[in-house]
Length: 200
Ligand code: URA
Image (cartoon, rainbow, N blue to C red; front, side, top):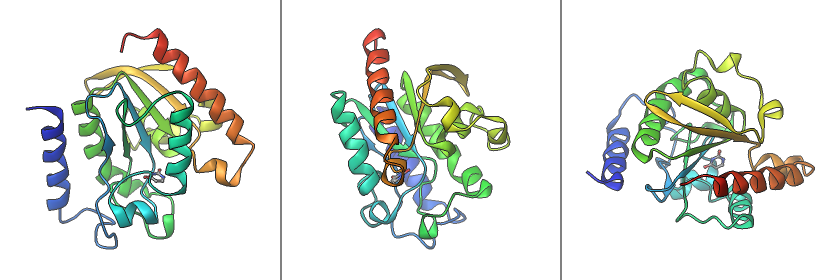
């Protein structure tokens, strides 16, 4: 089965999942976008209002910032896949609870296994702590925060996947902390350098 078909099967299973927290309050499932064959997978936190309305990740204000950062280093959705920790929007964009992360992330882990990217770019604290905690909700607390980890290239093997994790500040953080713009731009340039060094 090709990767698009395998992802579609996962998407269908989420749609059929009756007990999925946040589902009832959401308008749409927000599964992912981009090229399933890509070598880079960006992992965000959770859909916002625009994403919930359209059923597509990173299409609101944070999405515009992510697009601009990708454009800065010559990446498009032909080169990357984009998904989130949570597949449905939390009300009022509040932080995800541990229980929500526990219920939604098995699907993210399946996406990682199907796409099998060389690089996982984790955007913000939740994605970074989940992935570097070995894709375990219980271990998230033991992982340092994004301020300490952003821009590092970290080899990881987890759940049958091996590759490099690069934690970055979440693009939405620039909207309320403008000083992070240059930090994110610098980290994206470092991502570009790393991609250039790899046989992807
Ligand atoms: N922020 C995220 O983390 N994901 C989205 O899809 C949109 C905003």
